[in-house]
Length: 473
Ligand SMILES: Cc1ncc(COP(=O)(O)O)c(C=O)c1O
Image (cartoon, rainbow, N blue to C red; front, side, top):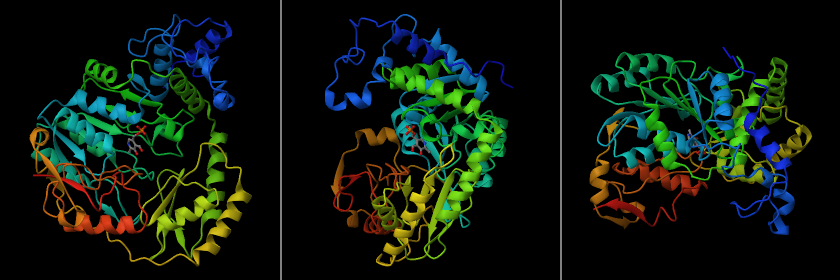
């Protein structure tokens, strides 16, 4: 139950007040309140630069908050129902890293959902943890890997009751949720804290139209990218603490290590604004958004080429391509019409509806019509079978991080890499979930799927994966 006045925006107000004083700047940043800014960009930046301040009197300090940043964070904690909320200026990436490093030190076990974002794996490597991966299930209803099965999670906990934490992703990129509460409750029976990457769920606290936030379901630490689904600036994110199973001093320690010592005030103030926005949304506002989602789905529904998949988060609209149609090619056709979806996998396109009614129905309708026309010229592709990717439900790395640090690596062509241990992750982006992990053995299935993905136009974060894959010697 919220106790504070959610109409307040203390950090934004302090910045606005400060700018009104026409302050003389003898301090960083070098743009001097926006006076010194090349004309070619001034038009776009001029209104925000006076708010791009540094830790001056009255503006507080993110790394030792006691004034307006503390007030803004406390308001967020009150709204989201957390014991403590930290503003993040390095995205959920920074939050995921801080929560994992805080919970688990070198060589300690940690249970991790295998289809996590790369920031999770990077933190495991940084901390030298000993991850126990739980594979997700392939959900035929949505034709994707989603969450691990409860029994797999249970087995992992029973086999590794000494794990220092369990890391889950809820919802997934496509807005799919699962019964995370039963996993949280089980982990707590073993006194294992549950750390949740809720990067895509900042809006779950607003209304019953959305699934419950894992924060309300008992998770110990929850990280949300406010910038993904709420009106916050890119990189603006939140870390919520809700238990003493993870030491908050350690979280603070890692956040100040991982994040800039000059955090951006416009990003921090946008978190104040995003929380205010979410708290101000009325039932009618959300109803209007839901109506808009239905309208957009009606425009998008194009049974011959794709179908709209069911989802738990109504703001995520996923188009499942009919067999043989490459989502990457259709995505390019959308882009030609200046319609920019969030991402494409080999067979799905994800569009994200905002928390405001859509206003470009006619433009969208015309664009979709032209895409349909163009579809006649799109070449048919063989279906990529990804349902057999995770052969083991519970798995550890073939080589521990400690060994990897000292082990030399060499580059081999992808075709010759089967059986080798990957010395780098191979990550299609988006969604940023590593397909092959650093320290994982490369299989023929991996190679075949990567080749097919590239053939169909997927972007892999790598300079040339087919020619050079780094493997341990
Ligand atoms: C599931 C998930 N977690 C974490 C992140 C990282 O979030 P950020 O971009 O805020 O650093 C992403 C980014 O796409 C993501 O999809």
